[in-house]
Each structure stands twice: as structure tokens, then as C-alpha cells.
Length: 370
Image (cartoon, rainbow, N blue to C red; front, side, top):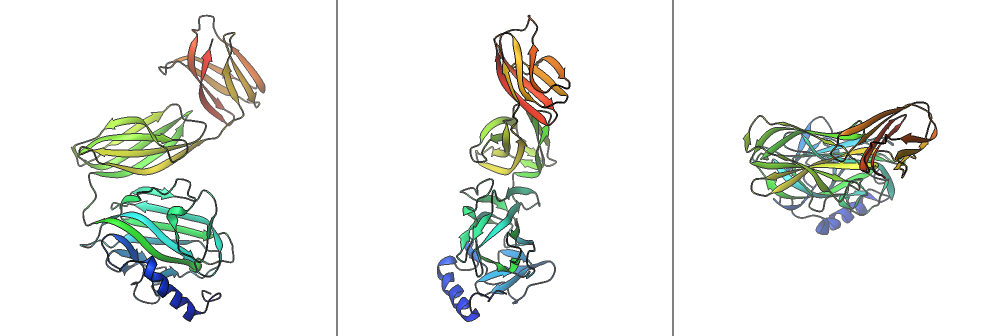
């Protein structure tokens, strides 16, 4: 299948020539590391095969001179490729800077390309998924240029020990073996077990009209603080909470934070660790989607709350002051269209947080009551 478009002799010469500018020497401790030393022509089987002196790769590859390509010739199939640090005395972790790949014989499109990164302990520290189908052609393309939902960080991913790639072509007639892996760009190759923090879990989930962020560590050494960062575009993050870290705790800790006022639409949450020496590292991003609603809530100059766009059904409404203290609760039953909630005459003017939930609606916003 792979020589449908180009004669094998011509392709081999092309790949050999391209290796002069695509790849550095195999085995470099930092920089570009090519896939040219897999060994047997077909590494198919179970487990992993050593790749040079830095990596082990899952046995789904066939070697093609200075590149490797997936060995699955089933049209329309989804393939999973795993690249691990070789381990032992050679390598335990590295900074994943980039990965170059190409399609074998024609321009086509990927509708699935997911990169999952794990640390030495097997904990997920990053995940990249496509925001939209990604075109791929016969020239080597760096995945840092892919249209991921969360952009590939300019500095790469630190403390990586395993890279898992799941991919699928949009064209049902294209098989995984059309994908060619050219090289991996790495830095900060280390034989040391990553410290000072072992992250076991990091989650962000809806809880009522807010988001509960939870994380668990298994080991903390010289951690000054944990910072929860929030973003609405997955690019620009701002801190919203900070928790003291542990200076010497082998058993780890559980942490939790409730974000009471997420934005309508997508909310991105990221954990940042700051060490006592001032160094920082960021971990996996989690996304929580509060779908934008046609329902609107506003204050009235007549001391009431105006709700517009309701569909028939029950709702629960709460009003809290800016300190978070709930000052009024109300239930709305079988109302559609607009709804006017008069407030007690004793209600003070000022800014409040209105939370409305039920019948597929979940929103929280500030309003000014006059």
C-alpha cells in the first residue's frame, strides 16, 4: 500500500536525502532524535522494542530507512502508538519539544490526533486533542503547528516519560500505515526520578453552578505552593487560588477548590506548582463547559429580578451577596417566557450574584439591584 504513489527506490532516496536536514545524529542527549535504529524491518508483536539508547516504542512500527511508519494496513482503523523513555541508566524523563510526521503518499486529513503525556509514575501530565480536522501532506509537519484545542506550549512539556498518540484518518479508505514518524525533538534528558512533586490526580467537574477542582499528590518535597489557574480560551491563564505546599511529605496530600463563578462557555483549569527555589511547572489542563444559555437575568430599578427566555419547567434561584452569603432562595415552577421576581422591601441595593439552575439551565452572574 505504501508504494502506491512513489516507487520504493525513489522514496528511499528521498527519505535518505531528507534526513540530512530533518534529523540530528541518533542518540544525542538533547535536541532532535530520529527514528532510524528500530532494528528489525517489522517490530510487530507485543510489548516494546528499544529505539536507539533513549526510547522504547510500542510494536506497531515498520522501519523505512530513516523513519518509522505504523504497521496497521487496515483502512479506516484507529492506531495507538506509545513512545517511552528507555529507562534504566539511560533515560527516565525528558522535555518533549516536538514531533515531526508526514503522510506517505498523498495529502489527506486527520479527524483524530490525540497526544497523551505521562510522567515517570504513569500520571497524565498533559493532553492535546484536535480542535478541528488537521490536514497532513507528504512533507514533514511539526505537531506543534496542529490546531489543538489547547495550543502546544512553546516550551514543550517537561518531565515526560511516555507519549501516547491515538490517530485516525477522516478518509475511511486510508489506513494507519500511511502515517510516517520522522523524528522527536527532546531536551533536558534526565536519569533522575522527577521531584519534588508526584501528581496522582487532577480533575475539574461541575458542582451545581460552580466547578470543583480536586488534585491528589503522592509525594511532595520542597513545594512552596500550589496555584490553580483559570482561562476562558486555553491560552491566557490567570491565578484564582493558591494553597501552601509541603516541604517534606512522602505520603502526599488531597487538595480541593470550589470555583463559584465560572464563565458561560468553556472554562479551562490548570495546576501550577511553585517550588521553594522559585522554579515553576504546570500540569495537565482540564476543561469544563457551561453551555451558553438563551436565558438572561437582570436587575430592575423597581427592586426586582427579571428573567427572560425560560422554557417551561422547574428552576431553583438563589441570590447571594458579594461575600457569598445566600440572602434569598426561590423556586420557579412551570413558567415559560419571562418571569419577574419581586424582592422584599428590606432588600438592600447593590451588587449580587444570581444563580439559576434547572431544566438544562445552569448559570451564575452578577447583577446590580437598584
